[in-house]
Image (cartoon, rainbow, N blue to C red; front, side, top):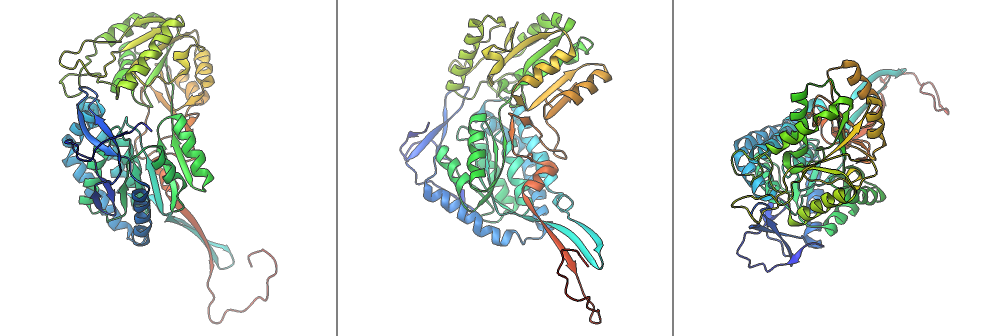
Amino acid sequence: MSAVLKPQSAPVPTVKLLINGKFVESQTKVWKDVVNPATQEVLARVPFATAEELEAAISGAAEAFKTWKHTPIGARSRVMLKLQELIRRDMKKLAACLTAEQGKTLPDAEGDVFRGLEVVEHACSIGTLSLGEIAENVAGGIDTYFIRQPIGVCAGITPFNFPAMIPLWMFPMAIACGNTFVLKPSEQDPMTPMLLAELAMEAGVPPGVLNIVHGGKEAVDALCSHAEVKAVSFVGSCHVGEHVYKLSSHHGKRAQCMMGAKNHAIVMPDANKEQALNALVGATFGAAGQRCMATSVAVLVGDANKWIPDIVAKAKTLKVNAGIEPGTDVGPVISTQAKQRIESHIAKGVEEGAKLELDGRNPAIPGYEKGNFIAPTIFSGVQPHHHIYQTEIFGPVMVIVAVNTLDEAIALTNANPYGNGTGIFTQSGAAARKFQNEIDVGQVGINVPVPVPVPYFSFTGSRGSKLGDLGPYGKQVVQFYTQVKTVTARWFDDDAVSTGVNTTISLK
């Protein structure tokens, strides 16, 4: 456990728990500092909820489900309509809080909130999204139809890198489907999810329908093993995701786990050079590389290898500073531990013989000398056996691999264990079609650097990046958060003639 013991009488604010519609002070003795990554200022202290508090949240959700599941679809939709209105109203406030505790730039923080808002807007259409189907006369006078019903208490475990978007991937759709929800956000930046919870309460979410607890492994294990929790949604690292999936599945729950990545961008020599390089640099270094969909591997095909100096030059133009500062392109990484880890990966790359084209270690940031800053860093001459190629660095580090053909680029990408996202930059429709057809990766961009789909579709990472059949949001998550009940029905008229006893399985 990374938490430390803190006195409850600390002068900094404490993050509350949301249990049964009330924001309550935890009775725990275990607290963790929420730290501004640009300044090291302690913004708040977050509790690691006690076993009793976790039980209260889950049991409260189970009790609330008894009535919420019977709430008309229209009423649920109107709650989502109100929630999206409130999120729009407080967009600036949410972004400011997000930047303070997570570090990303204010424009990127607003984007974080907005991509989550799009899911809330999609949840407003739950009426059409949750329709069943019917077929008349499947046999003589017999109809068969299926209906979608909520499954019960659902849980969400979310990471530090998107403290607004990813919680909004989960609880609005789960609640709109008629379930109740227990959210455990990252203990590194829990304040933004709590602001979203306040808006959910203001929007009319009834007590117990949405609950929020904080903590580490103990909280995760409690959610994955509790008998009342029917489904678990997770976004985070491969190590934790595999644990969540195995534990949840062992206890008979549905689980969807979106995990690590090593996303490859293939740059063909016929690509629009300026557009491709802008996209590549933005997707690699935006959010300080702390996106599961960051482009961390640039695969330059043929003559595109001549563009390395141009990539380096473009990366050098990015401004590294605190997220609140105007014009900032790259903010700090989340913690001092993350900074040390990323720097160790860079050192390993140098040790292995990759060419360090741009070294972003220890940048000078006036006024923010204590911040967790790493400037854009670029390696060329990287080989598949190198540590920096095999490892998800999760920082502002681009590794460049040179290949001769598109076939080599596809084979390289498919050989990587991850399957979250990939992209190709080309002006050739034939090359693009070949790529999308042969690549074994869940999300594919064609001249699009971060191919995360809009909420009408579903997040579709694959292979080592995803466990579980169904992705978050979109149509797939409606299937995840509902159970199908199939009904086969026959109705007899009063004067119907009996056909006698049927001892077969045939419908007669």
